[in-house]
Structures are given as structure tokens and as C-alpha cells.
Amino acid sequence: MRSLMVSFALVIFMVPGSLAHAQGTEPAGKSDGSTSVSATKEEVNQLRSEVAAQRQTIEELKALVEKLVATRASDNGPVQVRPVSDAASARASSQPGEVSATAASSPRLMNAVLVEADPGPVAAAIVQTPPAAAPKKDAPPLAAGWSGEHFFIKSADGQFSISPYGYLDTDYRAYKGDGAPADTFIIRRARFGFQGNYGSHFDFAILTDANATTGATVRDAYLNVRIRPEFQFQAGQFKEPFAQETGIGATNLDFVERGLQSLLYPSPGTAFRSPGITLHGDIKGGVVQWWAGAFNGRNGVTNNNTNEPDFVGRVRFYPFRKSKDDRLKQFAFGGSIDHARSRGLSNDLSFSGALPDAAYNFFPQLRINGPVERYEGEFTYLTGPLGVRGEYVQMQQQRYDIGSETPGGLGFLSVPGIGAKAWNIGATYLLTGEKRPENGTPRVKSPFFGPDTPGGKGRGLGAWEVAIRYTGIQAKAPGEIIFNPFTPGLVPTYDFHTDEITFGLNWYPNYWVKYMVNVGVDQLHQPSVTGQVPQNFFVVLQRLQFRF
Image 1 (cartoon, rainbow, N blue to C red):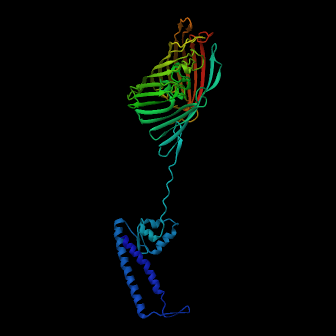
Image 2 (image 1 turned 90 degrees about the horizontal axis):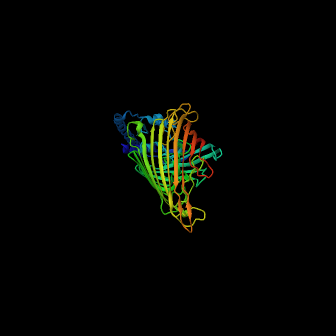
Image 3 (image 1 turned 90 degrees about the vertical axis):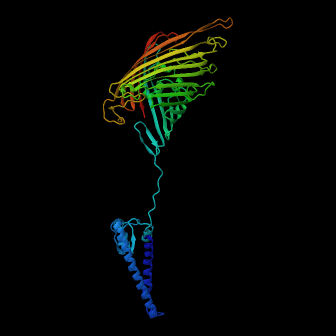
């Protein structure tokens, strides 16, 4: 049909030219003062015959077109045959580059040519309307916003994202006791960083502490590769996966400071972080969690000084995670092991006996050389607003070839190692009925002021939580008398222990701000400082924390 239409169009364009030529041939005579050759009678009759033949051809083509139009109308709906003047006026009524509503609503006959409702290449050539240029597709835009937890920027396809995050801990600490520190304000933490992902298999984080007083300011700098949920690989600097409280973020602690058992953790000088690698994963949807890693164990961004890294292994079980009973789902237990090596020539010292609340130092630091071993057991029970946690840690630090440790003592003599054990058990209860998460902030039902909790709204008194904890530590370094006629010596014995009872009140005015008050009784049983007497120290810690 389209070939017929093309042929018919060519005929239409040729006919007016022929007619114009015929009508423009003047009879014999003068025109505009010029002479022209007069046409013979035979030539005029021949032209008339040709015009009559062309008119007959046009009428036959019109009849054929009308038949085709009728056939198409019966198949696709009504089709109108409109004169050229109507089509021209329809085009004139439209803006340049546009098609009028009438012209676009139905097929029409323009210049005796059938034009379809959806013009093809032939109709476009006849109408002489250039096609509109296809708009160029812009590059996919970035998406940015607030996730309910953090700000984020990510690609439109979600394959790349980055989120800034951070938190600030401002404390006021008051002490009472013989030899206690002065009351003071401190900035306990001022951390800021970024976290994000590359696709569905790579996660990263960078966290710095602007208020770090020991070690490097870098806290976290790592890449985690999620090959499968059961098997993941992490490399960089991050927390060594030893013990329960290292797995709890600083913003989610139940008390202002961790318990005394944290004194025996690896790398306590840099918030339990060290360069290294670890393999880890969640089995059966988190019923079993496992970690196995190797670290420098030197407190932060510091090179190892032995040929033996710090090996850490941990496993944690949730036996009722898939149970229908909500009272048992959040019960967990597990344990950790750690093996490292100290180096006496690098002046390695035993663990620090300074309490986390800085009230006093219950045990001196001694030179060590040789293996260091740690063992830990843990449990957690959460149900509704109630949370109970417990932990036990034991450590042995050897003192091979360290000398007599007395003034003027000579030689490198081995003496008994240092043994320490610590425990911690605490409970929290949300008075306002929020659910206690394992490692997170309670979803405040009715914020006192500030932003609404993600997923909720309304105003109230915020969330209120009470807490109580008992924690203690004991350490012993056996002494030895060296009977040597040339270099006699004495290695003194140290056997001290201390414990602490803490009462806490936590107020969450909204989901991102927390105010904590802890009243602690630190019981010093055997002082390690000459002249100090056994006594109780009373410590009041207040903290205002906000995060984003």
C-alpha cells in the first residue's frame, strides 16, 4: 500500500507542473511586446488529449484510494478523507514541531494521499515535518538523604554509598577518698569517620578520635569482604574480636565505663584496636557466630616486634534464635582465646592496673618476656526491657629471662609469671518499656524533645533505664629469693585485688542523645601504692553523649 501511495504522490506533484506548462503556453500573437512562435492546432489538440488522460488517471487513482480507505476503516476504525485546504489549516494551527489535536486524532487524505494516524517514513516525507530529536539521557543522579540512623550519599543503582558518622562523650567526674584524683571535666571521646559499601560484597569504615591521648588518632580503618554470610574476610585496623564487651560499641555501653575485666583485654591502650586480619561469619542466620584473626597486638598503628602475631579466636552461640518464644531468642553464650608473645628487649610491660574510672591503680606494671595467654567466657540474656550480661577473663603473662628486678641486680633470670582474673556481671531495665537491644540504642517511644524516633512520633519523658553492676579483678606476681653469692637478689611478691559496685541511671531524651549518671563504690583491699591504706573510694561519673 505504501508503494502505491508513493507512486500516487509523485503523480500528484507532476500533474500541476504539466497543467501549468500547458496553461502558460500563449496563443499566437504578441506578449509584453515580444514576438513568440504560435502553436499549431495539432499541438494544442495533443496537449488537451494528454490532460484528459491524466485527469482520467487521477479519477481512477482516487477511486482506488477510496476503496483502500474503506477497507482500512473497516479494520482499524473510521478514516476521513479531507481536502488539502483542511490539512494545511490543521498544520498551520499547530506550533512549529507540533501536531494539532485534530490531525493527530485520525488518519486523513492530504493531497489525495492517505496519511496514517502514526505517520511512517513516507507520510513524514510528504508532510515535510522533521522528526523531533530524541532527548539525551543524563547520567544517573546521586541519591542523598537520611536513613533514620545516618546521613548518606549513594549512587542511583545503590552499588556505592558512603555515610558520615561520629559521636562525642563529655564527662564530669567527681571522687572522694584518700589520694583520689581531683574532680574534673573531660572529653572522653570525640570520634568522627565514614562508613559505606562497594556493591554487595565490600564494606569499609574509617574512624578517627580527635581526643586520643595515647597512640595514634586512627581507630578504625578496614575493608570487610562479604563472600558469604558464613565466610567473611576483614583487613586493616579494628577491634580484636576478644570478649563480649569489645563487640559492644562505645555509644551502646550500659555504663559510663567498661568493667574491670576489660583491663585484661588485648590492646587496651588504643581502645582494643590493632592492625591485623580476621575471618568471621554467621552460620544458620546467626545461630553460630565465629571469628579467627591475627594482629600485631601492640596498641594501635604499631609494628610488631616479634615474629609471632597475636592470635585470637572467638565463638558465640544463640541456641534459641529461631525459637517462637521471644523470651529465649536473645540468650547467647560463648568464649574467646588469645595467644601472643611479649618481648623483654622491647621493654614490654604487664597489663595496666589503672581502673577505667581512674580512681586509683591497684597493681604495678612489671617487665614481661615470653608467651601471653588469655581465656574468656560470656553470656547475654535479653527479654523485653530487661538485659543481663556476664563475663569472666583469665590471663597469664610469663617473665622469662627478665633479671632480678632489684637495684643493682645482674643477669637474666626467669621468675614466675603474672596471673590475673577478672569478672563482670550487670543488669539493666528500661522503666519506660522500650525493648533492650543487644548492641544498639533503645527505640525511644516518646522523645522529650528533638527529632522523633525513626518509625514513631509523639512527645513524652523520653526513655529511662536503671542499671546495676558488680565487677572485680585479682592479680598475682609470685616473688622469688635468688641465692647467689655474687648477685643475690629478691623478686617481691604482688598479690592484690579490688572490686567495684556501680549503680546507674540512663536517660534517653531522644534516640540520638543520652545522659548517664553512675555512682560507684571502688573497694581497694590491698593497696599497691606505698602509704595508701585499704579503703572505699566513691566515684560519681556523669556523661552527656550525642551521636549521628
